[in-house]
Length: 260
Image (cartoon, rainbow, N blue to C red):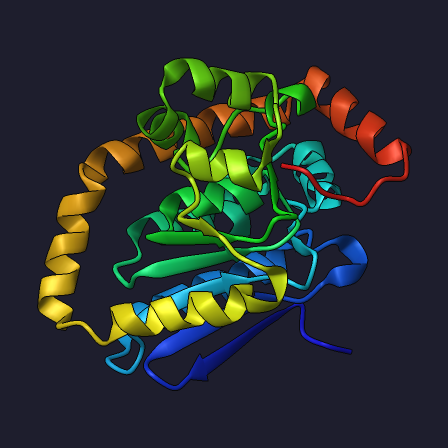
């Protein structure tokens, strides 16, 4: 059986992290979050890795969190069973703190964390079929991955409100127009071009790159404060009757176990 996350170190100092659970549209499990977190942490610790690329399978980036995992967390009575100690949050924290430049290659659906992950990437490329959606509130949850802070900075408060509260989907061209995507590329060139751009980043002087990246990204303390505030609210909402009802209803419709 294929690994649901594969990590390949390519020529030019590029680490490729590929989501490989196509039967569930790359819905993320705890084990997948652990693998991605470790992949990022190892990249930061390695002199040989100069940039990381996130990719999915053709036609699907990620359908978000595996909702069956969320239901298990929501049913736990102990504090240690909730979102606050989950592999998902551990990955999100690592994502926000990673010093190695990150590039996303988004083909097809990018839902929930599949979309908010892109807010932390230094470059984002999409295929014409890319479609970003953040349906947290309709599932009785709140935004995560500091998206309540980062998205308004990128697109303005009004547009961010529409995207985060009303879960309005973004097609690739609109995402590019809003500044959330660098370029829309043919699907058969997408990952290749993302890797090429990552290699360009990896070839730059490491000290200058790290310092410049920190300046461009701005106030890291604000990002982490937003992330932690969201995590606290997310944990509370995940245990709430309204969220449990919404998640159960979604799963009962026999859709792929993903979306947040």
